[in-house]
Every structure is written in C-alpha cells, then in structure tokens.
Length: 127
Image: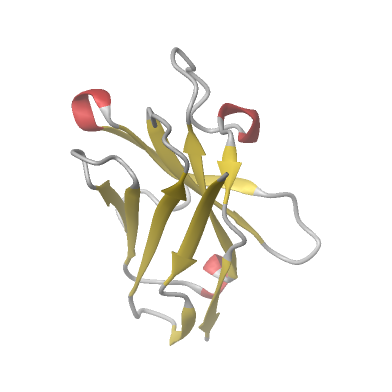
C-alpha cells in the first residue's frame, strides 16, 4: 500500500510564504512524477503544479506562475515540495499531493494522471 503524507500547511497573511512537503512511502513502486492540486470549498479540485523526474520538467497553473515553485528529490523520487510565495487569499484551499506511478502518462495537470493521493493539508491566507 502506498501512502502520501503532506505537511507544512497553516495560516499566513497575504504576501507571506509557506512551504509544503509531501513524502510517499509504502510498498516498492516507481514514480514518474508528482503533483500538487488544491480544492477550495464549493469548487472543483484544480491543478497547481507538477514535476516529472525525467528531465526535472515542471509545469504550473497560470494562477501560481511566478509565485510557486515545485521541487523534489530526483534520486529517490518519493518527496516533493511546493514553495509558495506572495500568497493571496484566493490561494486558500486544501492542498493535495499526488503521485504518477504509471509509465508513459502525459496528463500532468489532470487528476486522472495520478495513481495515489494524500489526504491534504489546509492552507489559509488572511487578507
């Protein structure tokens, strides 16, 4: 069984920063990429950022480009981080980490492109 645990969420004022972490553990499995999604009350879960281990390629939602940075452990490929700067009240959401454990996928920004999910960590940005 694969487990993903997110940490680093919390309450921050607008303009502040937070760093989220996600660690995957469990049975032996390969990962080809990891991603972050978020969900606000009453809204659909949306893509935030993703990293592909091959080539260390990254992708971001337009709403977070220039403010958020995704990074990870490209050796063990089981840990990912999300550095969030210049946070805005509209960034308030539960942030979920996800793992793509299937070779050959290309859907970085869609939920069906991932096999395993964490339970989420709350990020609240006050104005």
